Image 1 (tube, helix red, strand yellow):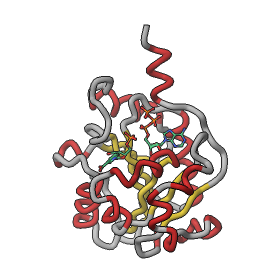
Image 2 (cartoon, helix red, strand yellow):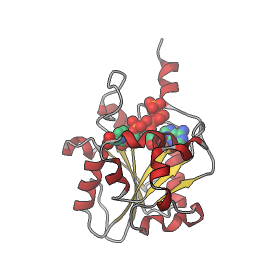
Image 3 (cartoon, protein in one colour):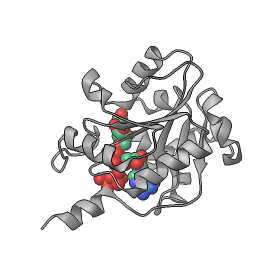
Image 4 (cartoon, protein in one colour):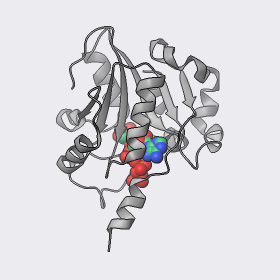
Length: 195
Ligand SMILES: Nc1ncnc2c1ncn2[C@@H]1O[C@H](COP(=O)(O)OP(=O)(O)OP(=O)(O)O)[C@@H](O)[C@H]1O
Ligand SMILES: O=C(O)c1ccc[n+]([C@@H]2O[C@H](COP(=O)([O-])O)[C@@H](O)[C@H]2O)c1
């Protein structure tokens, strides 16, 4: 787990990064800036529990590609979930919380992830552990409003003009960040690569 000091504000950006692309880098920079973060953990998952591993590149390669894709020193590429043998985000967040008292965290995900968030294991617990920032993504700009998560936690949605204080808020609290969007996707990159 990357080193952090008490009082820091840290973004948690989990992904398959199979491979990483400019859309991921944009999400990371938007989160760092709009949420006023000191650090962002680019957490390369051993494997999304909801995705097939058939097309998944080895973890070591996804880590290496991620390191090549990130230049900002505030971004820490990490794969500690594999080392701790956790892959469900609810377990990851519980581990992070237990090991980092006094540090503020926020979970970051793209708008498409919000649509399927209610299929994640113990998703209500995730939403009640740390605040969540959802970053706009082409194709999900409006549909996110009909997601189970958005409806269930409608009362906990914060205005994005207050994004800079989201990390200080008690979960459940979430916001949707509009702004520059990227249409890059790992699926499209893999499709272009395959013969
Ligand atoms: N272009 C993008 N804009 C906004 N968020 C994105 C974008 N690409 C990925 N994300 C977000 O980044 C996180 C990790 O995504 P992931 O590594 O699965 O990339 P992906 O392009 O969605 O991959 P795949 O096409 O294989 O599903 C997720 O929260 C996802 O919503
Ligand atoms: O915990 C779950 O049930 C769960 C289900 C789907 C995705 N996630 C996490 O969501 C993050 C994004 O995954 P992905 O594959 O969309 O890049 C990554 O950290 C996954 O571990 C977690």
